[in-house]
Length: 141
Image (tube, rainbow, N blue to C red; front, side, top):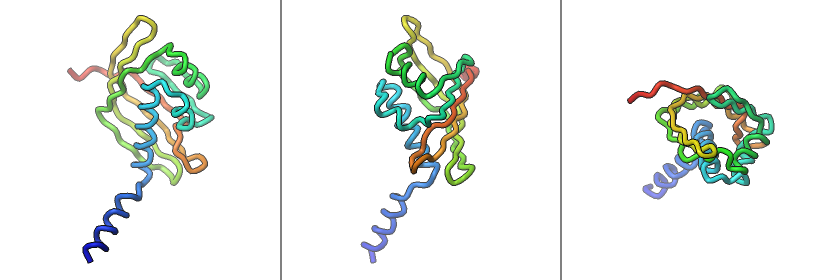
């Protein structure tokens, strides 16, 4: 009986729902971006990606990958303060929250707090970032 319960509990934790799957895909995206690893990053981005930065500039998937590949902007940290993942359909989820970003662009270092909205879509069985928009948020300190 104990073995059956152990197997049942293990199986329950092994099956991730959409929110956990999206969180895992986003963690992989952030880690690949910080590492500058476009080989790991590319499959996490939808071909239809629209990536809106906090300064109002928007990029396509290829432009995001080129920026990471070229090290024009080097992301050092993307630390979440709050995160909420809301599945809106079987293959679509919204991720919202606040984060602290640190990056270097040329000789300029930036660090700020932002609010974000990301749209994740399951494409060919994998979650991919479809749209992202952030805006600078007031510092809470």
